[in-house]
Image (cartoon, rainbow, N blue to C red; front, side, top):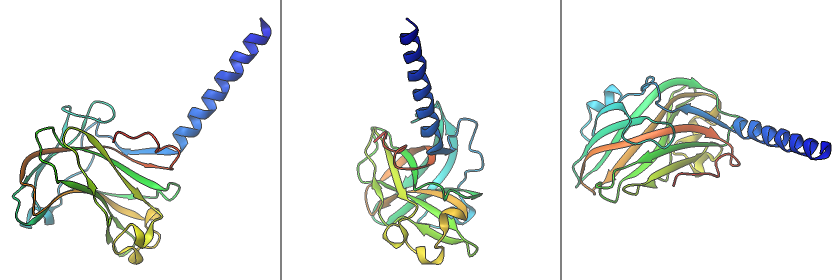
Length: 206
């Protein structure tokens, strides 16, 4: 009986240590459970014709984690490239992590063809760094945008201007895009923005 008890205690301890390790390998940066927390459409984007985000609020309509996400309303006209961009200005050092992950959702009645990408402003020169490859969004499904923080020029445009970007983040941004098509007027949702190492990032909502 004592042997069984000892085994059970050891199993619990091992599982607890595994959970602690997993938590250390992922850091949730923004989950929108208590509001936008500083996320907004930047003033410059509100003035440009090719920037079509109209408003951002917290919403309980959809969430990939918890009960709330950020809802962004956009008006993609089609025929030209347009983007809906939101960001937060915050100094971050996420150099202990290898990936940035962002969950993005478009409703079931949204058209196919929209894409999303993560964007950083980083370094003392406030360099604008965007992912070279956008992630296709699927109506009615959460998709995870995965950005390799150590990818350099393979992953990021203009990466040479901020070679140590992960240790000197000034802004985090997300952009949903329509490249001439489709036309779409309505919301999309962003949630559970986190820095992670690959072991912690294996479980995805894609």
